[in-house]
Amino acid sequence: MAITGLQIYKLLPQTNCKECGFPTCLAFAMKLAAKQAELKACPYVSEASKQQLEAASQPPVRLITLSSDGRKVEAGNEIVLFRHEKTFYHPAGLFVRVKDTEAADVLAAKAKEYDAFKVDYVGINLHLDGIAIENASGDAGKFAAAVETVSAATKMPLILIAKAPAAFEAALAKLSGVVPLLYAADASNFAELAAVAKKFKAPLAIKGDGNLQNLANLAEQVKGAGVEDIVLDPGARDFLGTLTLATQIRRLAIKKNLRALGYPVIAFPGEGVSSPDEEPLLAAQCIAKYAGFIVLDHFTPARAYALLVLRQNLYTDPQKPIQVQPGLYEINNPKPESPVLVTTNFSITYFSISNEVEGAGLPAWLLVADAEGMSVLTAWAAGKFDADRIVKAVKTTNLESKISRKRIVLPGAVATLLGEVEEGLAGWQVEVGPREAVDAPAFLKLKP
Image 1 (tube, rainbow, N blue to C red):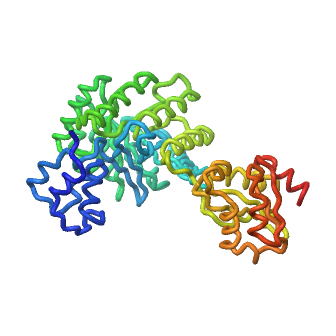
Image 2: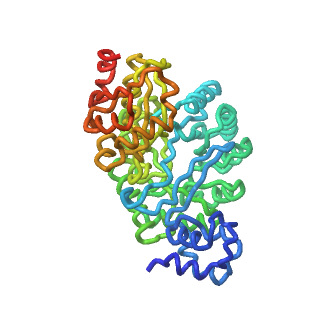
Image 3: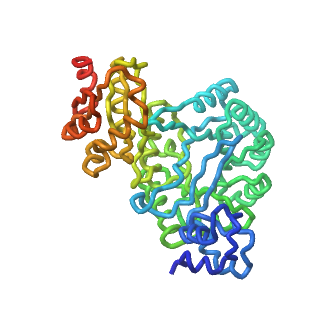
């Protein structure tokens, strides 16, 4: 039976020193029980308590962090199998692979391209997480030069892919202030690569042969060699094998508390498909089930955008809507006489109406009322978008001081609010607009 937060609390020093990063020992105990904190964060816990709390102090999936010049990507520390149970915390890191057989100017250009790639999705800035550099030449000197070239062109976190310890040694000597992932040790070379990882304090990936018992044994051997931060490659590359092994690893870690498999998984979808067009499909599967790091072999903005949006949707809190800040927004440099459109602060609702009006080139004010992140109809049905909230939004944004024409347009889906809003805004012209955002431009052209 899992130990409870109160049981953990009784074994803590109960000083409320806050040095663990939490306001009280009880709060820290609850995080330990939820496997969202580690016991080593408490500097005053006794050795006797440490022994009793060892199982409770570690998350079922160890948190692995790759970093470079302040930028980082984290994987692990998840405590559930399904996002409807509790939100997922650390989105799968998306890396793109380059090889040391490519010319230095090509490597630098690719690194800058991947670093610069960003997309705006309902107000959220989505981007790639890092670059994987492969020692395809087999030459340690070329590998080190490629790593130096890439690290000079970007500060994105790195994954270093090689077989020989000498190649890792040469590459790591070119890095400063960088914590990369070393890929990958297997049964034949784990001792040598574990020594390198321990020396440079870097996480080490281990590659299995499709047998989880062998993978667990290898993880225990690497841990015994002094490497705590481990990433698992189960060895499968096809759709079914990747899905099966990743799911089994997650279940064994969370449901059975099997520490030997309690590490993030790395996936290489490009190696398991017959064409580049299939790679995003396997990558999407890996994002959902249950990769911590994903290395892509083919980059296009369209493919990357689709994967980033999918990842964002999976790694948001399912019980908390995506929302924008309530307030008054300007579209196409509105004038004092421009119309005022009203909507809620649900991100998709906001961007739907703003994009339609902006794309049509029409100037307008967009008054975003606080509806706790709900869409228009949902918020209205829940009593979160009513006349009082609309009137409050008008007053708190000082809208009247910015316009010369007291006219606002309500969403067509809440036409029933017309009378109440007119009562709350005496002297204002209140109109009902279209139900759908796509019809807003035509409405504004007809009634400017």
